View: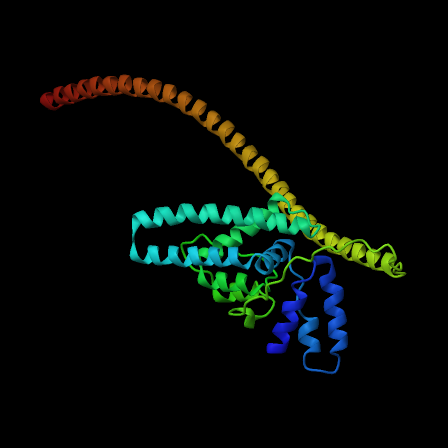
Length: 296
């Protein structure tokens, strides 16, 4: 495992475009050994993860500062020191913003432009490293393949942290610091590399393949979201039509109710008149019957 971590440490220190060909070449060299398959299985880091891995190796002191402030912040939270907690929270934001800016600059020196979206992922991972000890160990390993994020309320699941690094054993490993290469004076007698164009094309094709893969994933996500919008719009129209029909039906029923109320009032009037006549007729009949009974 020590050998595998050492190889991973070398591979994840490379420029992003060189990772896959270097990994495959190393696995080919190790063919027939127990390391060939694990090396071949090492995942290519995302752009944000690569920026963080580069930062850990080029600016290890700043990363250590991030983790130190994070440890102090966690202690303050446990001790419930409100004043110190506010001060450390402010310091956390300042530190993560400053270190993210430095990470963008270092990546730029390597020829990689860091977009705002990638910078947000870098800063979110640095924040996670401060508030969660496991995330801190993942960042310090320099073997990230994906970024991390946490609300700070609950620690991240250990499995999620382990999936963010190339190897579960990377947690606890510290990346080897590496200085930025210092460009030497131009060699006017350099022999042209006949494979340079082929290597550049291979790197460009790899970048295109990665971009195609990301585009396909984004397209799939968009298509799913667009399909959901279409489904909900159709359902909304259906429900609105049902509402309109119910309103029309309600208006009809209210109109019928008003008509029935008028008819009921008229019927009650007729009933009351008939009742009066019935009482008069009953009285007359009873009187006539009494007269008959008296005449015996």
